[in-house]
Amino acid sequence: MLDLRRMMLLSDLADLGSVTAVAEHRNITSSAVSQQLRVLEEEAGAVLFRRDGRTLGLTRSGQVLAEHVRRVLAAVDDAMSAVAETRDRVAGQVAIATFNMGIPTLAVPLMQRLSSAEPDLRVQVQQETSSGALRLLRQSEVDVAITCHYDVLGPDSAGGLTTVPLLFEPHVLLAPSQSHLRIRTQGLSALADGFWVTGPQGSGLEVAATHACQSAGFTPQVKHRLIGAQNICELAATEVASAIVPRLSVPSRLEGLLVDDLTLGGRTISAVVRAGRQRDPNIAMILRTLRAIADQALPGQSNEPLGVAS
Image (cartoon, rainbow, N blue to C red; front, side, top):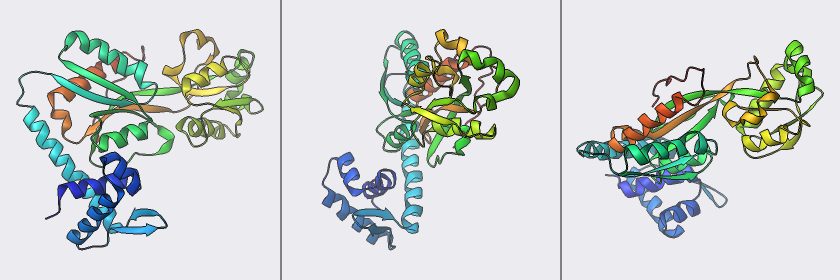
């Protein structure tokens, strides 16, 4: 029978990508990790790993086993949730990892509501990228990940996780005020000769902006690259560059730079938990409260949950 602790190391390796990272995460030596993985390979009776220089990767067999390990760990989570359901009250601590805009939009209102409604339930928040939050969730470092996924990037891999979409946040255009009339008559192509500000290369913001511009028939002249939609908005406020950003990142004082009635795609903000954990009363309370907050996040728009995906 495969050892659960060794299977957890395999799952870590699939998520973290190196023995060194696994060792740091588990607070053990790299040699101990390597030894346990070799034993796991013997137990499985298959070649699970391939070495590429100093990097230890997974073979096809290793990838298959890692996916099944995630299901095993999900079953353990399900057992923990079943035990938690026997509690007669909501109490304890729930750790949440969230992307930057998830903090003012969801995490802070969550803490404010629960501090009065459920004073025995404590929320611990840490900021991460969406991919980093999911990695912490898979490693059981946090209980809930609040993520954003840009619609131009295709589906996420969510094996062993349950995704609860909270709201769809449309992208909007911030443009110099003198160009608004041309944009309303010509569309986004009116900005083909202008400068743009967006996120780092390969970021969701950069991909979304490039996709929208290319759909309008041009490649944007990116002059500035910043981390965070709020910072992008601040630079766009100088009116030296245009920007495509998620709606909730635009402060009210900059709404005069918004050009309405453009279809620019958007992103889905979700709460993600390990499969089965939504039955835990603490996590169920977190999810219910996040849904209620999300319903009020974009006034005048329908933010009904889109369903639950496993």
